[in-house]
Image (cartoon, rainbow, N blue to C red; front, side, top):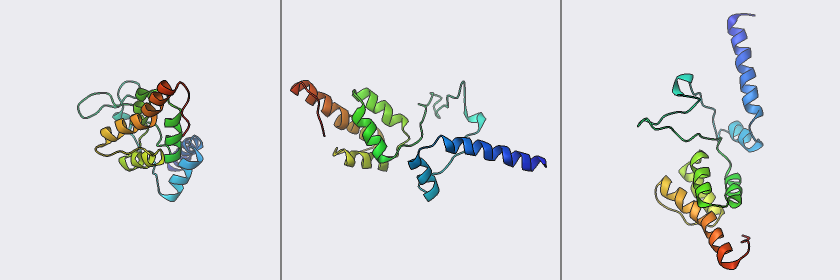
Length: 141
């Protein structure tokens, strides 16, 4: 086996391991062109995988982008606004994804991504926690 062939086989093994970790929705998105794989070089990481912003601050670690339904379901399970904001900031959802999640949860949002994130966290979790406090019981959508 040539060096190039061995390298290609090793690469395919790594891709197979990566794909095995993805959900069915994520695999479908890749297969239909709705998502793409990205290469992140080792030089882009600093100290245990923490990437830095242009200003030199550590970036929040990103997770694989969930589907709209997965994101809405996860928000429905969170119990604090802070958890919701953190989830949304690390979920890799784009602005149009955040708006779709908001529509699914019947939350009105507008503005920049940070404003939409805050509004969505408030509308999805803040409303529910206020309701439960006032009514003394769980809120069911």
